[in-house]
Length: 422
Image 1 (cartoon, rainbow, N blue to C red):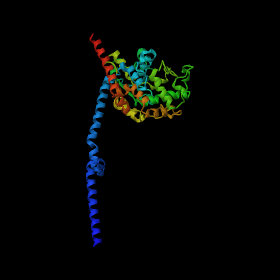
Image 2: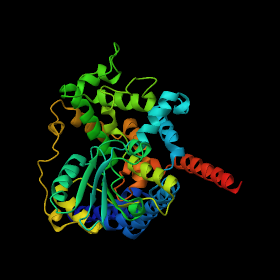
Image 3: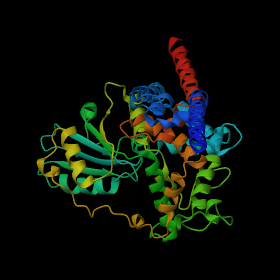
Image 4: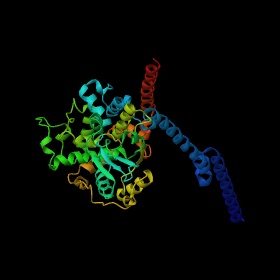
């Protein structure tokens, strides 16, 4: 009997203990946030936004950046005409990214001249007139954008046609114009210039700059024939040249020298040899020369850029097709794939490591990369078929950068209106 009573007592005690423990758990589940994790599906619903909310947020951000970029493009390169009033400002903004004191670069005449040449350099091209003398085409060269392969293949494929005329001019368009239209434009009757098909090829501006830097460095390091005699005799080496070939710090110093004072501070302009540095200059120079011609001849009579190829990939097949669909009067033989061996550069092998070092620096996405974005704002704005890197887009649409450029472009536009009104 006593044994049975003890068993019942123990059983009741166990039941009471379980009941109390259950009550504790139940109460805790209402007050302890950690218990929200018991149900993963419920916790996800409570703690994360829905997919539609997330997409809307991202799209709104992208749309706002796109709108700001569209406004900026129209302000600094309307109708593919570069705004010369922001040249110095772009270098000033690049200096800010590098941590320099905020002061305008062109206060020194030597640096002002460099800045102007950086944005205006161009180097002629190839012209063509069909056998019936009705159709005309001009290809404008852009260094480090496949220009050797393009011009050499054009001279080969187009000159094979009976009765047609093909010519080449390697000098700057500025010189060609100032000397009375010799070279590139003179074979075309002036009354037909505005009917001439004008084409060019460009590439990503940052890639273009890095490729140009590699070419510039290679020609000196490899003692490129025909270049060394132009080397500037200077007992003090350029700042960047004091660092080992093919190193990241050498490229970083080159960008710093170029932005900080290419002529007055670092002596890289004129460089060694003096025109090697032109390989890194802006691709918008061809647009500036066309703008000069419009200013002189008038909008109606001057030639305009018909089209541009926004890539240098597969040039041997892409450029012939691009040329055929852009210009009338191009012979069918020119549409065939080109000779890929024409125009190859030894620098592409990157014997000294300049190319890869520069690409590694760009991938760091730091102040050097932002400075490169700054000085290439016009390139991306004018040739807007080119994809815009995220870093550059972020810089261009930041309030400080965007507002300063818009202000500068607007002020100069208003000054122009006042002058016209007078």
